Image 1 (cartoon, rainbow, N blue to C red):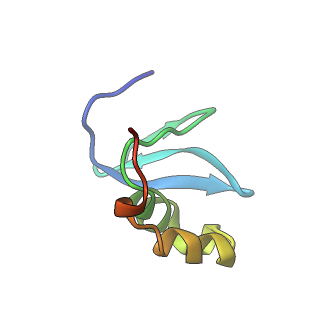
Image 2 (cartoon, rainbow, N blue to C red):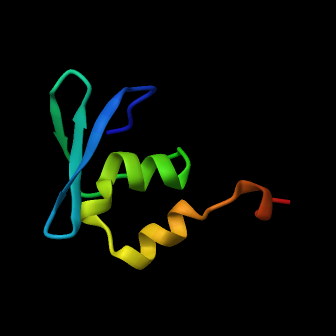
Length: 72
């Protein structure tokens, strides 16, 4: 399933694996994979949550700077 613009409350993580998403309206979509097109801070810090991530990874994500990366 591919959805257009939706408001996501959180990415559901169980046993260290993304299992789906909880929508803003409280509905839950289970999935084999969760893909994101938003920046790493929003995806991991806001939606996955620091408590579901390793400390070193959190430090790297919090230090991410778009200016240092280029797609060209």
